[in-house]
Amino acid sequence: MNKDIGKKVKELRTQKKLTLKDLSGLTNLSTGFLSQLERGLTNIATDSLHKIAQILDVDLTYFFASPSKSGKYVLRSYEKEVFQVVNSRFIHYHLTDGASNKTLLPRIVELLPINSNEDISQYAHEGEEFIYVLEGVLTLFINNEQIEVFPGDSAHYNSSIVHNWANYTNKMVRLLVVSSPNPFKE
Image 1: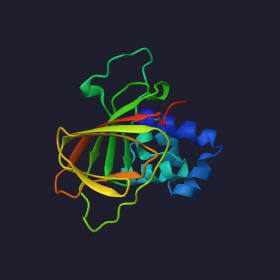
Image 2: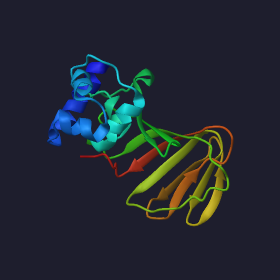
Image 3: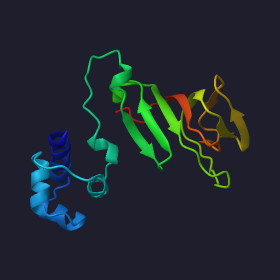
Image 4: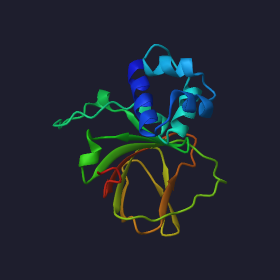
C-alpha cells in the first residue's frame, strides 16, 4: 500500500512539474520524508496525505483506488471500494469495474444523517437518474417538492429537473443509483 501511495504522489507531483522541495514548501512536510514516501519506505498520516491531495488537486480517495482491470465483467462484493466521499456525508461505491468506459454509472450511495434545519439546495444537470432505496428513509427533493422515499421505493427522473437528496433520520440511508450519462466516462 505504501509503495502504491508513494508512486501516485510522485506521478502527480511530476505531472504538475513540482520538485520535492516545491511540494515540501506547500505541505510543510520535509523533503526527506516526501522522498521516503515516494519510494514506499514510510507511512503517512491521513491528514498529511490530505494536504498532499489538495496541493495535487485530487480527492483523498485517489490514493486508495486500485487500477482497473480491463476485460473484467464481474465485480465481486469484496472488491467494491469507496470511490468518493462528498461533503463528509455521501459515500459513493462504484458497482462496475472500469467506469470510465461505460455509458451508465451504477453505484451504491450511503448518506449519513444531517440536521433537519440544514438547507438543501437543489440543482439540475444533464441526463437522467434512477434511485432505489435499499435501507433507511431518503428525503428526495425534486422540482421544489419534498418526498419521503422508503426501502423498496424507487424514483426515476430527468436530471434537468432540479433535485437533491437528504437523510434527516438518525440512521444511514443506502441507495442504488444509476446515472446516465456517466460523468466519469472518458
